[in-house]
Length: 276
Image 1 (cartoon, rainbow, N blue to C red):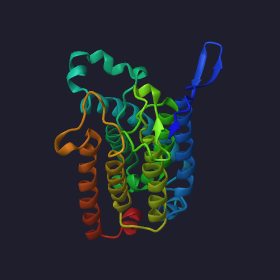
Image 2: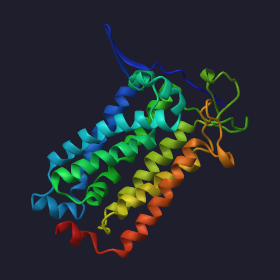
Image 3: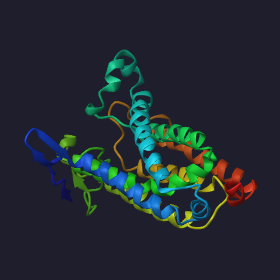
């Protein structure tokens, strides 16, 4: 088994200013999104729309800015609502204490959806066209976030077999028994694997909304699987049917994704609708 390497969360100290690795992973996530967004403009129907001047690089900058706001606001509110509603109802001001930690992907997703609704309406773009553009650019940001989780030594996994070669002891967990390095699993599944699937699927023009639907299905399934190896939050434990809160929040994503994929599959062709 392995020992967690106890990485210093501060990457660089400049006098009183501390630059944390976690913050750098967020910057990496934003940079990767912008880079992939520029490449996304080469995929149909966005290539034709870019040629016509409908989609431009400035749109990527605006989407990124709004997306960041959606992630922060939605992620924080989602954590407070989904994981500790009773506590934050009695301590409402602490909702603003983002430096104390506590973010939810599922809440962040809702925040991003809300931000993209605003973007789509303000630009008179089809909402699902916007979501199809965004979806393949997201998984690398998720991968960067899992790197930050590992560096911080947080969100460790459940106990593993002592014979597991990559089982890892996280001293901050209060146990000397090996655990699954679930941050690495999520990095590989929700980050790299989902990115490859999404990017390959989105390279070919699909019916409008189907790319976003595949993201919902893919993330939901991979997160559901990864949660079997991740230690449940100590203040929640396992919920009904011995599933974690993260698994229960992923189930609606999968159901919605499957329903949307078939719904859009029966609709008209995305490219013609997008160019209208």
